[in-house]
Amino acid sequence: MEKLQYEKPYIKKLHAGVMNKFGTRTGVQPVKNIDGISVKSLIETYGSPVFVLSERQIRKNYRSAYRAFSTRYPKVQFAWSYKTNYLNAICQVFHQEGSWAEVVSGFEYRKALGNGVPGNKIIFNGPGKTNDELQMAIENDSLIHIDHFEELNQLLTLSNNLANKPRVAIRVNMDTGVYPLWDRFGFNYENGEAWTALTKVVNSGKLQLAGLHCHIGTYMLTTAAYGIAATKLCDLAIRCQTQCNHKIEYIDMGGGFPSTNTLKGAYLPGNDTVPSIDDFAEVITSTLLNYGFANTDLPSLILESGRVLIDDAGYLLGTVIANKRLSSGKRATIVDFGVNILFTSFWYEHQISPAQDFVPHSENMVIYGPLCMNIDVIRESINLPPLSPGDQVVVHKVGAYNMTQWMQFITLRPTVVLIDEQQRTHVIRTSETLQYTEEPEFVPTHLKAK
Image 1 (cartoon, helix red, strand yellow):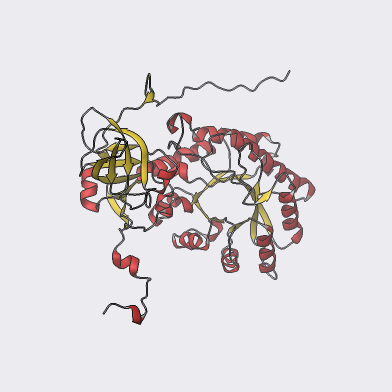
Image 2 (tube, one colour):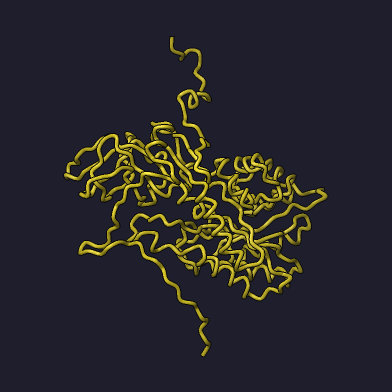
C-alpha cells in the first residue's frame, strides 16, 4: 500500500459570523477611513461617486503572492494582467515591484510600451492579433502566445527572411475537472492539437518555441485543477525535449486565482471558501518540482495574476439619493452609482458599509443605482441599518475589472484616486465631462442647431 504524503496541519480563521436560527450573519461596522483618509473628506474633495485605490494594499498583495511562489520555486516571474486594471498609475506600481506586462490587444500592448516596459518583458496573449500588432511584437522581441493555427500561419509568413526568430509559446486548453471547459482559447491537449501545433513550430525553423501557456478559468475555487494543468504542460515540455530535442524555457500557468469577494449564490463568504495564494502556489510548484525535470532543465514559472492582486485594494465611495418601499413592502435604497461603473455587482455580493455611525437596528433591503434601467441593482438583498439621503457608503473589493469594463451610460464615469504609502492622495483619472464625451462626435451641417 502506497504511503500517503504528509500534509502539515494548519489553522484557518473563519469569518462567517455568529450562528443563529436563521443562519450565519456578519455584523455591519461603519467604515469612516481608508488608509487613514476619511471617506467624508475624499467625497468632499473628489466628488461622489469616486473610486479609491490603496497603493499600500496593492504592494502588500504583490509581495505576498511573489513570496508564496518564490519561496517554493527557484525561477518565478509575475506578469501584471493589464485587462484587470490598466490605469497607468496602477500598472506602474506592479512594474516597480518587478512585474512584467501581460496584454491581450494592440491597445494594451502600446500602453505597456508607454509605461516603459521593455518589449522582451511583454507577454502578448489573445486570439485577435493583427498582422501589424504581431509585427510590432516581433520587432520588440516580445513573447507571443499563439492561440490558433491561423495565427501560427500569420507568424510563419511574417517570420520569412528574419535574422532573429520570433519568440513564441503555445497556449494549451485542457480538461482539468472543472466544467464547462475553457476550450475557446488555445490548442487542445486531449485531442493532440497542442502537440501538433508544438511540433509545427519546432519543425518550421522560423520560430523559437520558448514556452507553454495555459489559463484554465477565472475565479477558480479549486487548487487541484492547477495541479492537473501543470502536469499536462510538464508532459508536453518533457515530450518536446525528448522527441524534438528542444528545451522549453518557461511554463506560464496564467491567472484565474480568486479574490475574497463573495460570489452570487454562495452559501458562505468568500473569506471562508477561497483558497489562499499559498494553497495555489503549493500545488503548482510541487507539481513542477516533482515531475522529473533535471535541475538544469527546470523551466521558469510565469504567473499572470490580476484579480487576486488588486480586488481588495479598490473601494467605491458613494452617496444615498433616496429611499422608497417596493410593492412587496421591502425597503429600497437608491445610491448615486450604478452597474455601469460597478460591473462586478453582476458577479459578486459586494460588501457595502455605511461611512458614518448608525442606529443598531438593521433591515433587509435592496440597493439600486441611479440608472433608468431595471437591471441597475447593486445588491438584491442586504441587511443594513436604514440609510438617509446624503449618507455615504463604501463598496469593498472593487479594484479588478470595474475600471476597464465600466461604461459611460446615462451617467459620466467618476474620478479615480490613489492613496500612496505616505497617505497622500493622487488623482490618477479625472472624472468625465460632457465635452469629453462629445469630442469624438460630428454633426452634419444640416442637423446643427440654429
